[in-house]
Length: 199
Image 1: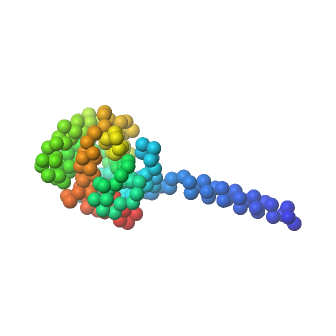
Image 2: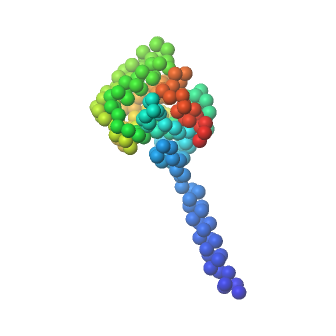
Image 3: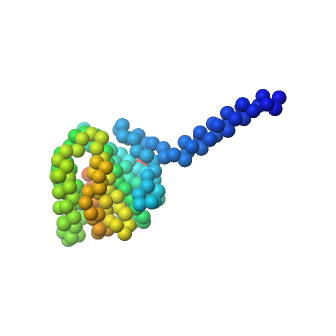
């Protein structure tokens, strides 16, 4: 009788191992067809998906974005003040003019800062705009990642390739984040989504 239970016990053990393995792997969150991992690693630190959503322009889907932080943040102020590495990832949902995206980023930074603070970042803004101009086009499925790495700066990765030297000023990363989280965000619904509302 004891041996009759053995296959059941082994099956239960196997099921438990499979469940454990699935729990230890990052889960996927799907947003408008883009699968985002609920965890990622930046500079050796594990970050959790704080929120994710899609940027719309008129009725068109432009890109899906995900914000990764070490701790949950539900306000723009908390995101900007958060310690440790951070990441904003974007996956394009349509073909777009890369140079135009760079211009929109620059305008978004300027719209959400006072003129004096923005003027100090102009060299970095011009370099970022040049990076996007050099790419000319971003196609559906292409990715852009903006990482903040303490002690290093803002690392810009386009289509899987790190673009030049890091932007060293801490203010530069926060200025970029204000494009989506500032008082004049690119998309109000995306702002709420990145702050975890509805995820």
